[in-house]
Amino acid sequence: MSGTDRRLFARPLTKEAFAPFGDVIETDDAVQFPINGGTTTRFHDLAHVDVATEGGRPLISIFRGQAFAFPVEIRMMERHPLGSQAFLPLQPAPFLIVVAPDRDGQPGDPQAFLAAPGQGVNYARNVWHHPLVSLSQTTDFVVVDRGGEQPNLEEKPYPAPYSVLADR
Image 1 (tube, rainbow, N blue to C red):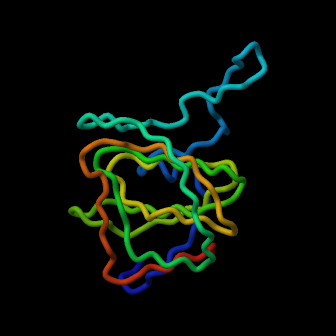
Image 2 (cartoon, rainbow, N blue to C red):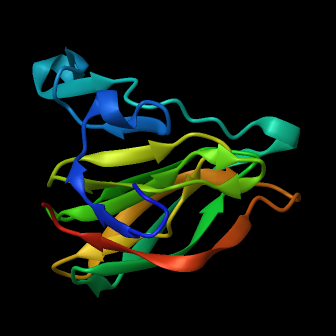
């Protein structure tokens, strides 16, 4: 991405492309085995939940994301220095994931991914990401993140917005 071109194109979410930022949560290629007398399939250990730093504890919440349409403007990023944060949609709807590497305590150039229905993500601890962006419909997400006494949110604006488009 050049310094003047602030357009991003969302690409499909894959485990390999997203690995520097966390885990893709999906059943494809997951370790699986039958439980409950064979009536249920367990898709095992799909993400690394990292919330114990400084006495943290896991929280399970539901976030309801209002629908956005492309192009989506990215003006800021956030990160959680003390814990991971997982998003699992409760409806089979796509959503947008925008992440960035750390550049001396600031978010670097962002990358955009489009989650397919049935995929979730787990942002690793301290990874810059954009807040929730539902697409096409209001969507509920189960969110697994960290609770505790210490602040666990850092937000930073970009000097100029990026525009995310669906694809090339």
